[in-house]
Image (tube, rainbow, N blue to C red; front, side):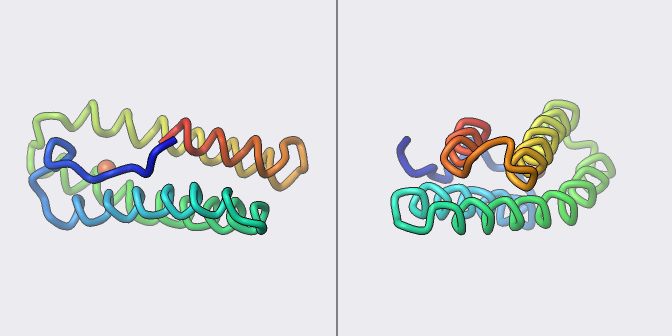
Length: 113
Ligand SMILES: [Fe+2]
């Protein structure tokens, strides 16, 4: 998988949220790079923790702000958040319980992003 790249078509028109989305792209790219290195398990764990922290902290705030601004694609964007949150939580549970190894989890994160 190629590194993800920010594109103007991804813009919400709200610079704070664009910056947050760019951060997500950075986490995913770090994971991709980490999986090519020796400490794959560490890279996967670090990325999962970052993603969980990020999504728990920022997605909800962002949804409230977008809703307040009558953002036209609010429902679509919220559905993207929900899909991503659901996927990351599931991956974390499987990783922490040893039900999936780091290579499987890493590949799934990259497929989800
Ligand atoms: Fe968002």
